[in-house]
Image (cartoon, rainbow, N blue to C red; front, side, top):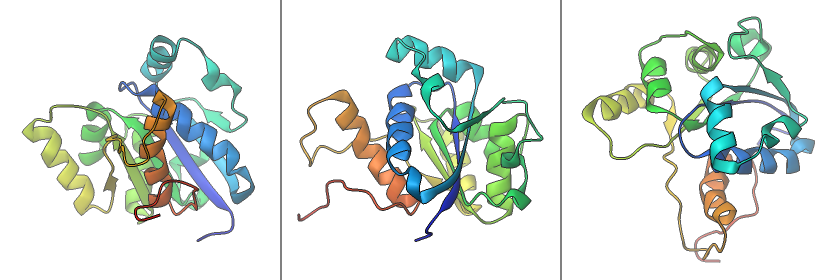
Length: 188
């Protein structure tokens, strides 16, 4: 496990803003292990956050935010040394653009950088049901080295609130990103 990390977070307009909120909350708690955390949100992500969570709390986090069209952002270059990009939640449109190498904004460019540099890309997909195009795009990203982690909660820990339900997904995502988390472990 790295002692300090450079991590990118991309938030798309898929339903599931609570996953992004819980992710940012947990990363705030892990800030001692994070050298840099860069965040990019699509316009739709901001609107969906306001609709689903009824606030604009995404503005309160102390991480560095980048505009979705800022191709001079360090997230857009492999030389900046970001080791992980988590797209949470990840819309199927974003997934499709990543799978097909279409870097039309900072989110898709940052994902392209992770794949070309053979670094960790985790897509927290949030869609159901899936069509064959979605499945083939997931296969393409997996074959290219990305990780597809559907936002599918677990209930072993008997979560009591929506945030606890979302945390079952985010704890798994953080484990995939090589962070040590205090979460439910099978058999404990």
